[in-house]
Amino acid sequence: MPIGCIQGAFTRSNPRIFAIMLSSAQFFKDRSLLIATKHGKELVIAPLLEAAFSLRCHTPTDYDTDLLGTFTGEVEREKDPLSTVREKAKRAAEEYKADLVLASEGSFGPHPSIFFVQADEEWLLLYDARHHHEIIVREISTHTNFNGQSITSAAELESCAAKAGFPDHRLIIRNAAGSLAYIQKGIGDWGALTNAYKDCLLKYGTVYVETDMRAMYNPSRLEVIRSVTEKLIEKMKSCCPACQIPGYGIVEALPGLLCSLCASPTRSTRAYVYGCTSCGHRNEAPFPHGKTAEDPMYCDQCNP
Image (cartoon, rainbow, N blue to C red; front, side, top):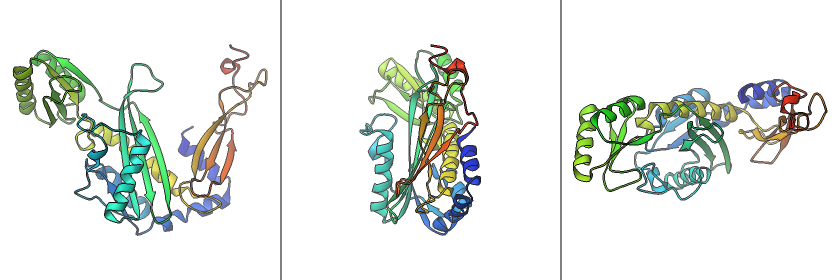
């Protein structure tokens, strides 16, 4: 069952939490939200948040998130994604004297659990400086065109571009993977792509083509950002039953669902722990997947 469905079922079973959830609309109503991005993420984020909470979203034109890292390596990201997105939000809050800031951070590479599949990992962090509070969500999606390869001919260039969804998805040409000796980014038409390929080949003898993963040049990434924004909205709607601050959600999955045959604890989830990052209140919700026992095929004792 999707997490959103679990949260909905859990909330409806507790009228007090459901009543408190209604107050999240007032918590955010008519507040100004600064979206800390320079790569067009506000195109999908702002309409969703404004419709859900009557927020007034705006994006500064001079906030340089590339100072904390770029996909193409001109600036190396020094911290992990969560630390980076937190720093983006807090820097923007200080620089623009904003009390409500949204920042995001994306990473691309092999999926953590599906072999030979590329993944897009997106983090969103809503920082409420007024209440010294954060709401964080994360999404890992296989919906990405992330790729790069060395090419030796115009035919290979055409094949690579087609696979990447060019020209809707823009491309980067450089002389070698990770090299900054020659790099042209944001290429969005065949003429420019062909010229960059010929120029790079003439100057360096090698050409490497890769997908441009900046959000405004990558519709697939924007779709994942849309999805993680919807997840953020659901979490913003869920308020803590103790302190009523929005952002109450799953903080831990507890293993130990008992085997239906031998009653031994398995590695399957027996409960979700819902928690508040503001006051620390926690609540355990058992059997989140609607199962009170696990099939013996997933039991290490019955099926070692």
